Image 1 (cartoon, rainbow, N blue to C red):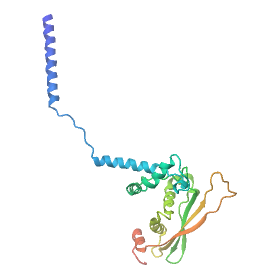
Image 2 (cartoon, one colour):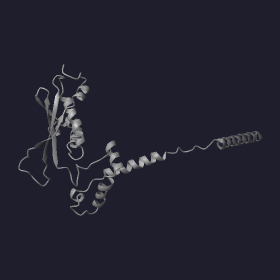
Image 3 (cartoon, helix red, strand yellow):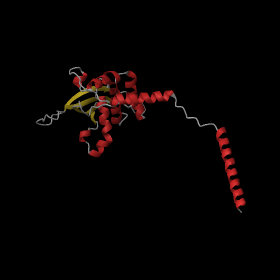
Amino acid sequence: MAKSAKKKKTGNSSVKAEAHKASASISSTTPAATAKKVSPFVVAFVAFHVISITIYSLPNPSKPVLLDQVQPSGSDYFLKYNTKVFKAWLPISTYCYVTGFWQFWDMFAPDPAQVDTWCDAQVTYFDGSKKMFQYPHIKELPIPEKFLKERYRKYFERVNDDSQFFYLWTSFGQAIAYKMADDPNNPPVQVDITRHFIYVPRHNVVPDKDPPYTPYTFFRYRVDQSKLYSLKGWKYGLH
């Protein structure tokens, strides 16, 4: 009985040994899994992207520092250099603006925006009649609508800029003409876009009363009739 148990145990051991040898043999003939190599172009792009958005996420120093009217101190030295050198470098500025990854700190310290603006437009039709186009004025909208139309305010904030985004004015005027066109026999022929603005006093200045908005017509657009009729799906010419 003991011999039988010993023989059985020996037999089990030899089976295990053979299985171990077979496993070792298989593992030695199986090629090791090789790690996938990432293209150096992908690595370079990711690095460039991270650096670019980091540069644009840093705020600008205050205007007096940026205009060399005040001596910078502390972090202003780096922020000034970052604004004038890194943000102005063409590859970074072009990439951030084209892709929409740019960031601007005009809502925050140290130098928040102090001008409240909105716009409307007077549209002149072929027969000489005029209508007003009311661009969404966030201040006057109910709260749910503010969330839906906030991007309109942001877009006009850019269109309103005389120095950088004036190239958008033509498209803006054409878009207004498109929205206001409802009769192919009496299309819009001219759009006069007016900005309304007030300077918001600083937090420590309490005005006697709310100042009125100042209107200024900054762009007159002669409507491109062929483009208007094409976009509307109208047959060009009077019907």
